[in-house]
Length: 540
Image (cartoon, rainbow, N blue to C red; front, top):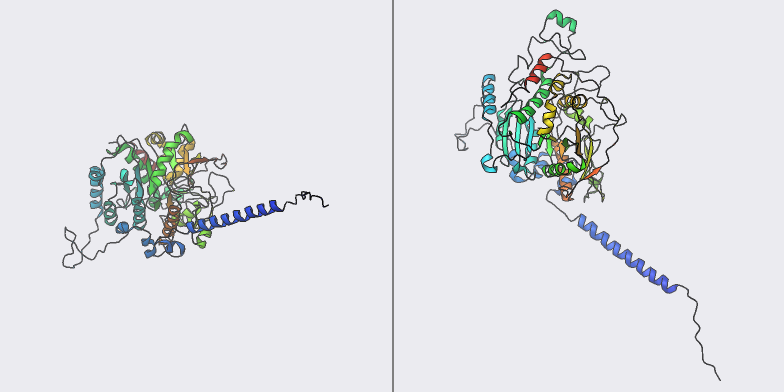
């Protein structure tokens, strides 16, 4: 008799568990691959007619630059022909050539006086009067109209620009520039003219008086010759050069004019942004400025300046690109690059043997920056677009204001200006023809509370100038730099890196407590001191 079989359980070998784990692993891998492919396709999905130009880093032709600009704004970049006369309706008459008349000095002075006296606000009937808390944008203009055209194009694309007042401050009277400025139709516009320019005073102070001492004449010789300013060489033993002193005079005059003299700004309590003709702005620069102003009360109550541009060794917009070459491309402007490309001095430097480079108009004395001595700068322009999940575009940094880093796209209000103006004597007598170094001196030696700045890590104001007052290249074409800025901002826009919902504060790099070295010179003439001080005495 066969007994009933008793089923004996087998030992657990883990086969089913391994199969189950293997299945989960394969499933997870498949899901991961699907998601990865989806994300890659999504990243590469944004296509634009302009994308071809972005992929081609070397394409900086005029046509490529123009293709990056909305067609409605091409009018600001188009140079009008001068060989056809027009009637009052703008139609050509007889195909004849127009005889252009260059105004003489007397005519220019009368026109400048008329502009400054009228204080006309263009487009006020369209956009309404200036509000007390609206942003005022002040652009210092010399005569580089090509750069100015591109600045205007960038301003035209900025959000909320219609609410701002755009003031162009000129130290050179030019009908083409006037026509360009007066064609601006996207916001309220005003022109003011620095009345003491070297253009209108070519043979007398503040221009170059023939009786002035030559720059390199020794004081002993100057005293024998009895030239005008023999007693007043600068701290390096050099005599003034009018073309270099004008920038500091102009900056100080326009600040006084905007805060103290214009009727339209009499009750204005908002921010005033200071730009120059060779700057270029991002479309969210006003939006971000407003965000910084709101958060400054919490993030930095002592900050009295906001800065939208930075002169770091590199500044990166971390984003994606569907072109591999873009991922390795580099974008950044060092302060030294700004010096060597735009404003660096040649043989006319007002320096001693210990100072390497001297220049004005927002200048820097390289290797004499009041920051850590280990900070080195490259003179290479480029742009960087790196693939990363994290970006710096919404981060800000708080630090003491440093002239060589925070003078681009800076903004402050009337409260800050009232503190600065109390130190007019320090600003006007400091032997440095750079307005920003003079302001640094004011901050360190006169103000009760030093200037502190909240600066955006991802810049919204860029420097596009290749040639300036102190440096002339054989090729001063601006296409290369403008093209790079356009590409960076386009990629940042497509990657949704502009218009952040909020900003966060990062820890500032450690800055050594070093004294500001002595000035760069070029400002020893007592006549410059008096003219500068007199600008603070005028009123409405």
